[in-house]
Image (cartoon, rainbow, N blue to C red; front, side):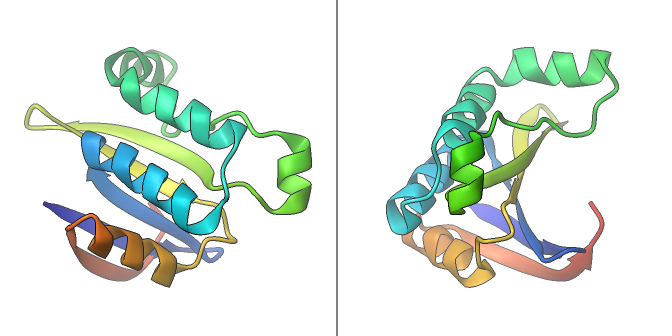
Length: 127
């Protein structure tokens, strides 16, 4: 199991991971940081219904899906997921999760290690 971590312009951390691993990673990060509310539940719903949301993205010519965010959670700094990108490659389903700026790269790396994922890193990308 392998993932790819990228730091995007604006100090956002992104992870490309298989769809099942994405669900595990989000839950692990929620347990580690305590962050994530409406954005987390909406992101999980999008990943669980991958095919429907992938078709929606394709039909609407969208690159990213933005989970619903609660304004009070945004003010308190409790948001976990900024955006999602659903990708199909060679019949496999992958998710690019762009985390909120408040999520540090080291926390994401630790969560991946706990889940048994190896990862490669890129320093900068514009995804």
